[in-house]
Length: 231
Image (cartoon, rainbow, N blue to C red; front, side):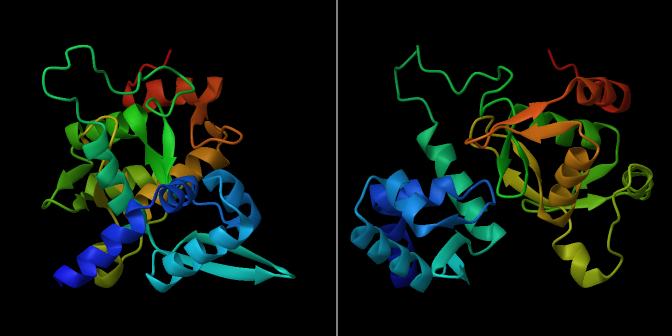
């Protein structure tokens, strides 16, 4: 097991490969050429990096014509990257002026995608409010349980929840937020909720970034539903 951990750490440790992985945290597949530009390496070097990441099961790809489009292989890879970012965001000892990302509208610290679910201050605040209202309950260090009232609340919002026991295990996962260092909602439910917010046009992804914009209607609805103030 220690050898597998070492291999994964080496894959993540290269700055070029790290840049590629971070660029894919938004859940959108990108072509090799664009990833080479992001990593600031040649096409040949990028090809070698991508081959190693695919072999290490951190990335998967699909062909479209002559091009390959790469994405993170699973939500678990995104969770691991987010967890490592928590370490990079810790203040150095004695650094009193250090601060995390400011939770101002339009910033990654305020609202962003973590793979396919909502993260940042807003993602954490929504999750904590759902817990406060007993719609979600933390069952252990990694998962939430959706209460009967929570299921009714979700379904009233247009979010369908699976009923099978197997699906329940991956339904609501706890993901440690690297800017807030508290948990936001991941798993099938986290992805479904963020998709529903987009479908309702309460939120919209910002171009060329993982940051998420909350629309005027979204601000009103989040206040009415959860009493979350968004300036």
